[in-house]
Length: 500
Image (cartoon, rainbow, N blue to C red; front, top):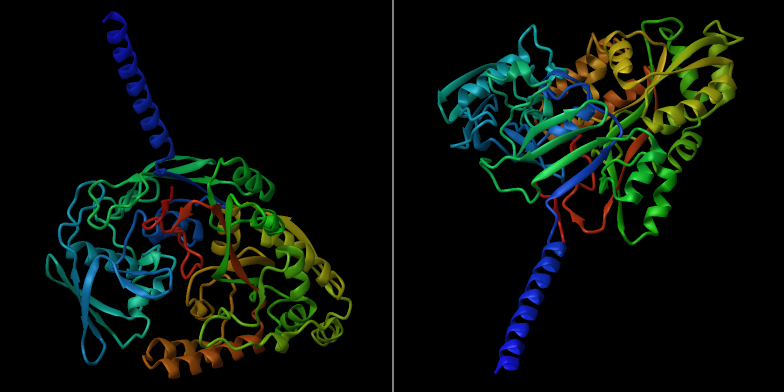
């Protein structure tokens, strides 16, 4: 009996140990709920309504902050905080019906008053919003009841619902608006947790989110500006995803590694050699045309992007229905560039400066562009600057001659119509076309106007158009839900999950 009892007891212990082992194995293989993403640039702050840096939206858009509408991965406008809306027959009045029982991350209730506050704040004379033109069509905003708001426009605007989906148009609370730069408070599925400056930003799941529960409980955005370090971090598993990978030369290595997915998509990022049109000699159209003809776009793409980009000749992406291929209008022709320089009074060329921010496309592309300009007599001294310096000196202060940058905002052709924009380009004809576009709802008519606007830019050459920035996404093969394309500058985590 003793031996039998001992045998039964031993068997029970073995079964219990096996159960514990199986449970441990099951837990080990359970889907993860955390994610670390790599980013090239650290944002200057986290308030999308008060800054132009794409890195802000890449963290907060659809994660922390939400607007009345949102941009889906397909580029379509979808409902967000507004569950539905009605548009008047004259297309000047929009009545938005808001989701009920929505709360901000600090517990405050979201209501129509917050919509009125946000839109009035964004379009106010003292607004610091980087995209105030998004709100230019608004005449007034009225609260009907806590769940209904009416927006009346000065004129019909075919882009209004799309404009309300930008990061610059997210809805903020009056109570926390002033502190959103460092401690963002929104209505989204993730809450701001902490920011280790120079290193990373951490978001945590919002347990009180009004919409669907995200699969992720924690998301960390790590800042890795160096391409080699980005490659190493992915290979080592220190980051599991790099939605906008900065090392195109390493793409074949990841394509051959079954541990990773390589997803090459499109962006709204028109990459340009910007010129200060108010500073001599770039105030002379012939000089700007000479610069455009001095650049071999294909050589820049091959050298800086390892061939993974599309040449452009205007400021619309090639996938836009109104895009016109004007690359031959300013094709590579160094002899023509020299001729134009001579006609402009610079037969021996001139000296200038080229300020380059940290992104690889700018630093590598800048070296190639500088060599091409030097071949026609333009000696461009390269000045590498950090991202905060670029925003302060170039974008805000307009203290530059030349710079290379990708503008990643969607439908942003109208920046060339802004009097205070850093290009310092002023064209009454172009501005008039943009005004017509904004007041036109018919798609075919809008596209025709867009085409005419592109032709004006090609002729005036306020900047030299280089290429459309691709989206080089690389992430763990077990990860799903990250966007293939960038219809808007965002790393939307709402549908991201791990598979077993």
